[in-house]
Length: 301
Image (tube, rainbow, N blue to C red):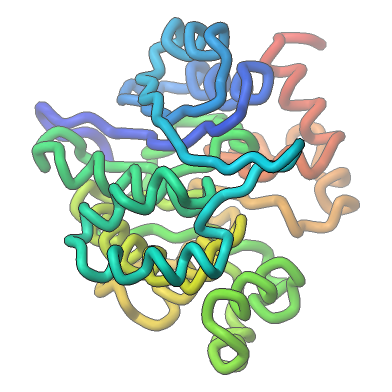
């Protein structure tokens, strides 16, 4: 559960085109917990003030470069184009996994490139550097306790969303799954509860194994779309491509994912209905809850 001698717990995320005002709840809420490990964010498009404030708060900032094509006021990410993806795919198939991740990361959509960058980082460090790793969204995550203060075990901990929706019934997840894998896979997996790809926690070894499978799957997509990593994440865990996965019911472990929880239910739980949950994810989908949390952050009555 905790850190081992000489090894730290790591929170790893990506903040592309995000400024301090968006990142502040993530960073400052974490500082109010007992977490004492490392926080590392890959960043691009952030201004100097944001980078300075992140570093002032103890965040390790890895700034990266990306390739984008501008046409007028529109910005295109190359691997969203099926033509570019088709031309690039032989190179990715011929490369090693680290090589494919290096080639694809600068031209991938953010929700895909983050996994490529995570894999390149974790596969290059000594395995004794980190005890446990949390891969996380950053713009919609609020911490109330140390995120590693639970029985992590040897498996990858994947967190389910509200059971009232499935991969087939929820529109965005249905689109991502069909886009990535087609109607046959939707028919096969559509009745499953959604596992949110926004937060995944495990030991260093478990997370590295997870990233190997995710990267191998992501670089073989026909083309990319924002959010398509969620389809790949669910395919990987439900098709048994990882030997050890623990599916954690929503709110029964360290994470409560609120995106598809009915607003009336969230409102009824306020102001303190979620005080015992270490990590509130997608809290910003509910303005009343967001206001409560920001007041706490600012120590306002």
